[in-house]
Each structure stands twice: as C-alpha cells, then as structure tokens.
Amino acid sequence: MRLYKHQDKHQDKQQGFTLIEIIVALLVITVALGAVISTTGTSVEHGAYLKEKTIALWVAENNIAEMTITQQWPDGQQSQEVTMAGREWTVVNDITQTPDKNIRRMDLSVYADKKQENKLVTLIAYIIKPQTFNKN
Image 1 (cartoon, rainbow, N blue to C red):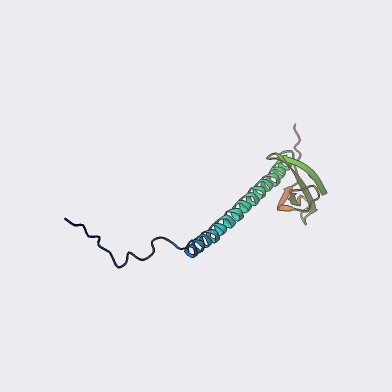
Image 2: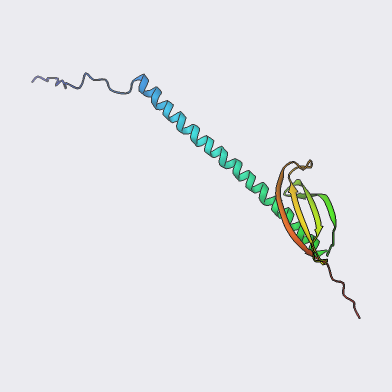
C-alpha cells in the first residue's frame, strides 16, 4: 500500500500575515486606542469640573441660607473664605439696594482660588429685611 501525498495547488501560498500587514494592523489599533484614551481623558476633566462647580453652588446656597437663618441685613461688598469638601473657597457678596427699601439684591460669586481669578458660580438672591417683633 502506497500513500501518496496529495498536493493542493494552493498549498504553495503563504500562510499567516506579512510584516507589512502586521504593521498596518498595529497602526490601526494604535490610532483607535489613542482616540479612546483622549475621549476618556476629556470625560475625566469634565467630571472634575462638574464636581467643582456643584460644590461651589452648594457653597453659594449655604451662604444664602445662613444669611436667611441669622436674619442678616448686609450692605456693600463682603468677602470671606469658606471650607467645604476639604478645600477653601472664596465667597464674594455684592449687595445693592433695590427700589423697594425692604429688599436688597445679593450677587454672590464663588471662586476656587483666593486671588479671585477662577469664578465658578454666580448666584443672585433677594434678601428681605428682617422684621423685628415686639413681645408684649
């Protein structure tokens, strides 16, 4: 019994990838990964910015709530440092009189730095003059 080796006419063709095909595939993968990394980096930056802006808004709202609770009747411009979420915030209140003598407008700005260069939030509120009650 003889075994004949059957030769396929396609057997002479190369099996596998050429060096150029591998380099092109790696180039495509590199470009795709670069785009993914860039998109991820941008998303992280936007997330951090939104977190910072949200905390600044809380600082502003807390300041307004504190003025309401303590029944303050501020005038002019005031600046203070506030700590929230483990960092310092600069709060600037610019109080102006409205046509109604019992109401004042407060433009409250929150900055992420002491130099007041990075304004994150400006909130406008109206403060009603606290009423004094006579206890008889």
